[in-house]
Length: 141
Image (cartoon, rainbow, N blue to C red; front, side, top):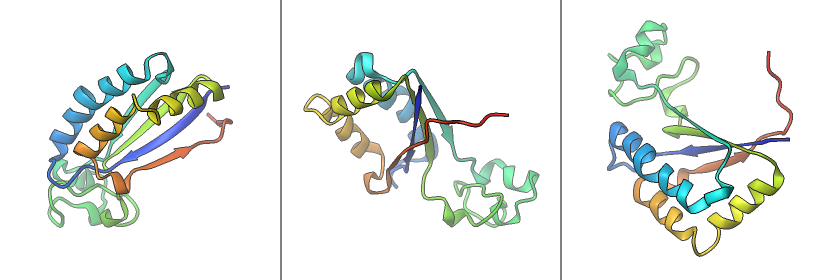
């Protein structure tokens, strides 16, 4: 049965939102794929936080996320406050099974995987990174 792992990345303060997205998609993920090789997840889905500057908060009536009340790059939060969101990107990785995840994790924690960790430090706030293993059972409507 497949396993889902959620990773939460926060960009370094010297990266704009667009620089972060570009780096994530064009540098980091290709490096991760090359490094992990056959142990790379079956699928990877990136979801970026919507930003107040897009006007999404205003369109959805989220007054706390209005582009008129917040910096342009503040997250759009429908319930709560923009300060509640401590990450810029949620990455969902789906692994075939326990073994693939264990092997992939071993690669990342090996000497060969050090290049991935160095790259993470180059564009993310590594102290804010979170990695969560999700239950195997999923409920879908």
